[in-house]
Image 1 (cartoon, rainbow, N blue to C red):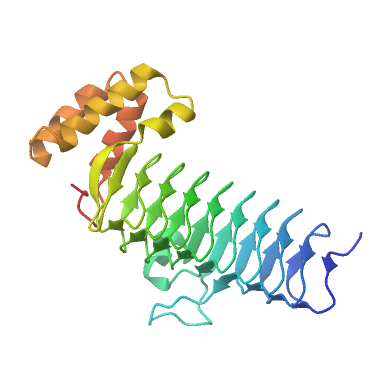
Image 2 (tube, helix red, strand yellow; image 1 turned 90 degrees about the vertical axis):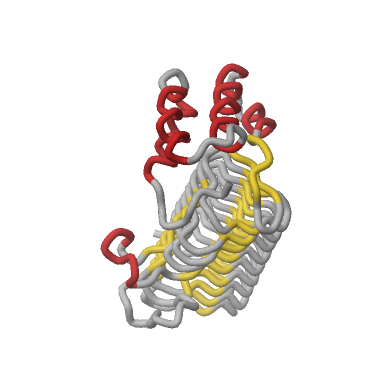
Length: 266
């Protein structure tokens, strides 16, 4: 079996596990207990620390720091925490993704997770115990505090800041420099600091092939949540009725019904 194509100036631990098709650029450092999957390319001056598992077909650009111990004051190097990165991600310059903590070990096994096919642009930060889905876009300088959940197809505008324990539902969108301190349901677009809801992500849904009738149903649910003037107990009572005829509204209903540690961003 062939060996990975590693530049002679790179430092790779003998205890790291790299697929033979992996390429490692000049001056990169890969620590022990790092696993890297097929066809992943690691650029120059990247630092990968373990424990961390990286899937296949990822592009990791120069000056990234992945898998380092969390900035949480309770975190310790010798704890059984890790980063898990899926397949087909593009991780651009100066991105930081840090290990989980013991605070959610029972539910997340101390993992910070990034799914598949995400585009994480320059200077973005994904903190400890965050869970990011697939097909998301983090624009430059978007940052997540600890314990944040980002579902599939979310777009974070540049310089978006997300407070700890917030949830952002599938297909949601944050505008430039949004300050998110509460949960954002699926399909909702927010703007400002502090962020407030503006509309649904209608153009994004059209581009992803959502039918006009389904978009109308999402908009009706949005109006119930944000424009009807009803209190949340009333919204929670009426939303399941709208969800009966729309899979997308049902997704919104499940998100709100599940609740979280942060209030809804209203």
